[in-house]
Length: 238
Image (cartoon, rainbow, N blue to C red):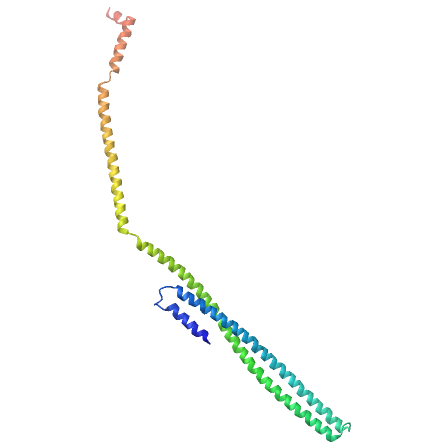
């Protein structure tokens, strides 16, 4: 059958290194499975027809065999009637002979029907074997197709990831990071410089404020005036 040729072609398509995309073997496998399912339908139809012929042949065999037995019985009855003078002996012999001829004809037809039934049984067995093979191939290829589709997904995902990695400008990224580090370092140095300036200015202001602090002198004056008001300075002098 052409099934195995198609399977061989599908296998070739899958392993052909010249095919860059895996979509082609997937499509070919799907088509191959569809073809096998069509062959399966045709084989099932043929099986049903051959089985019908086998059944008909067996029925014919039984029918002819029954006829042969009936003619045998009739021949015996006729001979007995001839012997008992119920029929004229010569006529009885002729009728019995004719019955035996019909018996032989029926037996030959039964034999032919038996041979035909045997041939049809062989055809049925062969068709059943073919059908089982097709079913097994369909199951195997459907499993292969699932695996192939899964491989396509993984392959596409890996390809996309590798493509993205390949398109990354590693040199540019490193350069950008270096520039960012340099800018951060510069900002940190600038902040430190402003801090030093602020601290220096604060130190000068503190020295000036300390030197210009008159709060103690004012406190001394206020104390002297208070003592004077209280007359404590005079009592001390006296």
